[in-house]
Length: 381
Image 1: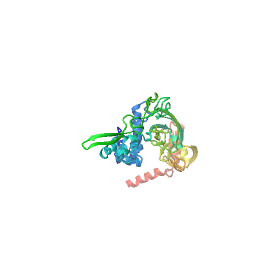
Image 2: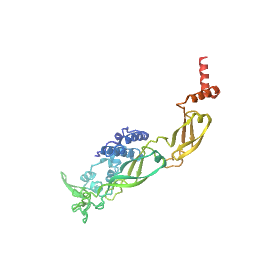
Image 3: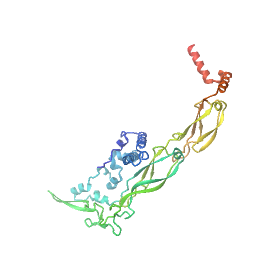
Image 4: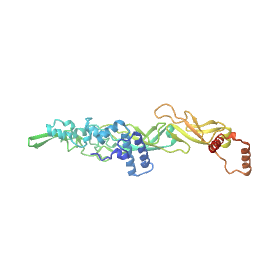
């Protein structure tokens, strides 16, 4: 039986939750346990890996279907390699070779664990978090990251044997990893095929284990790799790097590296989908007369003409100045919202000028004000 918690329970969602609900739950929990917020906290690191693994499975339609049907056995490579694609992955530790062998004299040896232990098995996926700036997420960035994972032992080359020695063929099973076992029954002796107890189904034994890895052929390593984070990635999304996970067994492929991306907020810009939002303060005079203002964008500054009579809260659109669409063509837009700043700390002379200006303006200069009082007048009449 697997010791892993139910993936839906890990993310705190119902089994019928939509992909959108799953993503929201993941983003909330990923931020809570992100390694950058809990340096050297093994418990937080373990929880982060757990929720990342649950997210990867539940947002993949095929993996989620397998998980809903077979549980962890349906998505765990160690189960799938032993089941041989037969669809019996959900039986976990049950030795089908023993069951069918006892009934039919060992004619179903293809199901036993001994044979599976010799097969190449893909390594487990590795998980890591990376934090990038808002602009790096919008424009893309190349980063060197440090990945901690299980790798092939560099001392013995993955053989598990000490220098000057080599794994030997198991004499108990003659290198097959399987032994024939006979059982006395009321009907006579019955035979079955099971994994060799001496070599644990590996077909080989190591007399002198490697001192660096203890004979396992693998050990924890730290590896620096360079990754390219594509333009347009958003907070909470995950990148997958094939083959950079934990090393496989018996020459199997390495697992994948899953990178959870956290994007730091920006003091000027906000993002909605692929659009960039920004508030630009302008003066009263600029709003009245119109003006050419400098507008910041994610790719640099541009000049924009604010028309005369611009009201507070007016939004202007700069097409194609937003975020590049992830793994696609085109860009979003830049949405500029104006805020008109009322001047403060005026001198007496300045205040007098403002009063003079107000006196020479008429109701025709205030469209919204005139409309409001017209509505008020008609209401009371």
